[in-house]
Length: 384
Image (cartoon, rainbow, N blue to C red; front, side, top):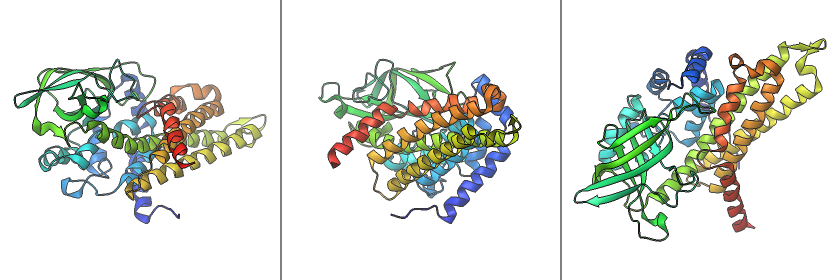
């Protein structure tokens, strides 16, 4: 199988790179990291150029491209700055459900504002008492009363929790069915709904520009029109959603690894030790060569996973491999980059310590690395 980026895809990468070079200011990233604030103006600027809506249908203001193009954007943004990249590229998180499952009315209402950058979305899965990687049972329930559904429960570790204008919420609509995942349903809940409360989680290790919070539902009432897809099919929709978004996390990891490596490589050519540039010392030079080999391998594995999705041949095993491997590479390469810079690598102004802090989350969210390995094993057992 031959695969390479098209001229259009290469142009997208270059356009995003130019945008980031102009707009992703290191001092802004440091300030927002310390304040734990979302880069709203950057998100809006990226949206106006179509970078946040690559896979959205053109009829709703999107670019009509695929997951691979979306991953190219994510990769370049996280290469330029790990925190800003994650925050800006995740502003429409959860909206993919509407693209594939939404009714005409839902799409017309929610997608155009997202494409323009006027709104932000979120998706609520993880709960305080349930492992984030396990969505087979939900404590958050939606109960039907007349023409309304009443939602009750709590979600945590929710990206964009306090900034989202609407959120997609996975609930248990049938509490008696077994296995329990056969009774889960997705709903749209809008900001300002009575009984909806959100709060921000503070002091995260990384991705501090990307707001993470807790969402509480107390008799939040929504109509049937807020259901996404079919009743009691939410689990199946969510699993397919994660198979795609995990490729996006792999793109984050590749971008972070690339960005940190470039800082370390440049530093190693300029900094001298024992009368010669650091790069000329075998331990540093070979280490940087090995690091880039791993980054390149992770990149093409991620590209392949995205390409398979766009070709209608999604392979959950390849998706899991891409996320697991790219995340591990990101941790290794950002750690080595700190080592190359020595004491300076430990300082925030030199940025590589933040790439390392930010990279850790790629081993956790959208399914931990342990879960990805189990997924790979499951499919290997079927093949051999």
